[in-house]
Length: 581
Image (cartoon, rainbow, N blue to C red; front, side, top):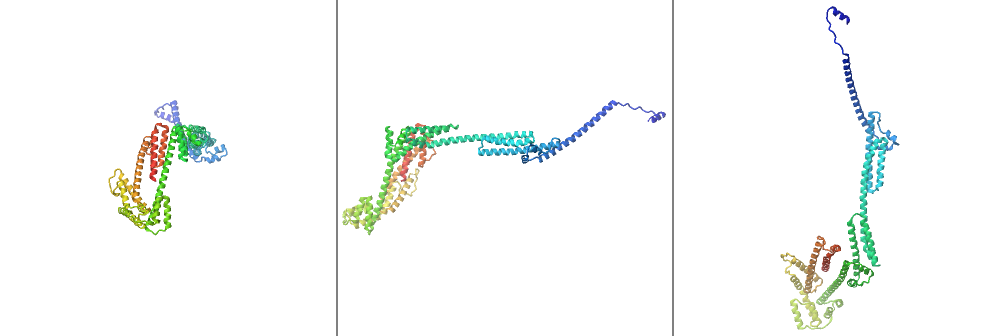
């Protein structure tokens, strides 16, 4: 370079001077460039490391989740160290830490699911078996400690977190069970209280009757002690209505037991025993001979005395009614049997040729039922003699033509020897031929009595009175034909008269029933709140009486309506029984 510079000078060639160099500025620039390069390299390194770290975490998480030990593996492990060894990964590398955390999370999730199921099962079984709350808490704690303890052996932090979650779940199950057990305990207490009350109310009646045999004090003592038991049962639960209603039912049961005992005593001998009750209640002096009933009578309150008085009066009336009905039934049976025998004997007279022993047997049987008629038939058969008296013959002929001739007319004439046996047979044959005509007359008489000239005619009948009368006439025709078939010599006109009388009685009974039902309906609707209650059976009527008695216990002014109700129901029952006969 120096050589070339020297040459350039010899040749007079000018060489421009080189610019000066600022070594300070140059160094700064160089440092800045170096720093930029360094930063770029650092960024490249960090990016590469981050990419690696992300990849390592992903791969580690996937591996850790896929290779996490099962709950069964943890259970089989001998100790905590063995359980730790089951967790994949490590704490030295990113991938290792990711593997370990993913495995821990998976194990914790599986343990929580299994623990939830176990706690749920404990809660279900506890609900079904009514497990004691302390025992249930122990079972839940056992699940929490067992599952979280297994996790704690592997990783204390994850174990603590799992325990916290399981404790919340267990506490919810425990609280729900405690609430359920409290409700069941309340239900059980209510059941025991009501059951105890019902048993006392059900049993007090017989207890009262049993103690009455000893003394009034014994009877009062058992009532007091049982009532105290009832109060204790009723106060065991928070339901004030139970106590009020139970006491009312208890008092009612005591009253009914006493009244029923008096009723049963009266039923043993209605005439004697009912009179004893009435005399005792009316005079205030003890007239009752039975010690138990006497002790009960002493304990009666005013309402019970009134009911006992009614029971006694009813018993006497029922006795008389039964006796009257029985006498009437016996009389009807006697007359029916007599009519049957008369028909047979009349047939023997008309037809002739009957065996004398058979005739005598029939007359003997008739003698027990109608001695006068039996004597007349005997005369007609076996007493010889007699002539046809002209006046008697004229009278019998006239009656025969008018179709009013009866067997009684013929027998009387024969008994008085005003006609011969042959004439008697002739007139009896006339009677037989007139029977169908008498049936027509009987039916016409029934129609006229009930205002039905033609049973089949169609008429406007808003009140259904003609329809009822028509049905009654039709019943009469059917019953008359049945009676003729059973007793061929039946007195049709006499039968029609009696049927008309029965029909009038039936109408009267039905009218009385209708009026009484109206009174019953009014009282049960306005006073008892039983507007829809039926009245068609005795049980339905008894239910209305029971409700009225209950109202009477709390409302004394109901007494007048209660008495009217009892009277109306008595009419309905009595008349229905009469119509059924």
